[in-house]
Every structure is written in C-alpha cells, then in structure tokens.
Length: 143
Image 1 (cartoon, rainbow, N blue to C red):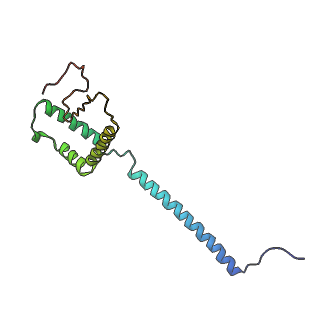
Image 2 (image 1 turned 90 degrees about the vertical axis):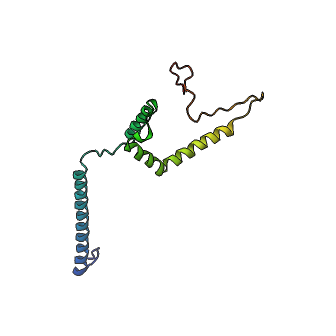
Image 3 (image 1 turned 135 degrees about the vertical axis):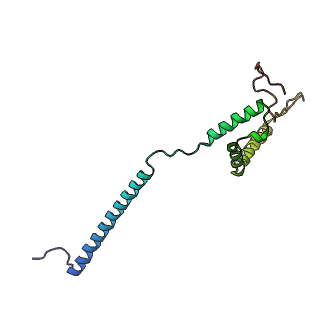
C-alpha cells in the first residue's frame, strides 16, 4: 500500500515551526507597539489643539488701523502684534504672492479690454481708495 504525502526530517520540521513561531512573535510585538504608540498619542493630545488664529490678529489689526485713520493717530501707536503680523506677511512671501496675483488679474483685464469705436475711452484706477464703492451712499468721506 502506498501513502501520499511528503517526508520531512525532524530537524527541518523544528526549523519550520520555529520560523512560524518567530513570525507570530514579531506580529504580536508589532501589534503591542502600535497599540502603545496609539495610547501615547491619545494621552498626550487628548483634546483639540487650538493654534493661534492669524485671522483674529488680522481682524484686530484691521480694526486698529481703521481706528488710527479715523482719529489721526501716529504710526508709533501700532501694537506689536500688528507689527509682527505685517513682518510675517511680508517675509513669509504672502505679500509677493498677493501682488503677483493682483498684477495678473489686472493684466488679464487690460488684455481683454477693447476700445470703443467712438474714441472716448477713459480708464480710472483708484489706488488709494479715494472713490467710494457705493456712489449713492450718504456717508461720504471728504479728504
């Protein structure tokens, strides 16, 4: 009678079983270390991290700027928060990006403008906010 199967020596079987045991041990170690890392992250960052909101500082500085303009305050009365925010805005590159995007919008606009046929075209650019956005407003500022 012939039986089907394979023959393995006891030394080979020992190595095979030891390899499976080592692989299982490594997987259990990985699972435990991942659980410990997750527990550590949950303990150290249990709540929501609130970072300093630059929009709050920006709003404060904008209100202070408007107040200074209305009351003719001098430049040296600007809070340090606003000075730091302005330096961060310029040195961080946001000023250059805003200037480039504004420039591209203006170039796109003027590239698309076609002169009218009567030759009476006028372009008025208000760079210092002299003109009001709402011409029908009763609260006009006089400079």
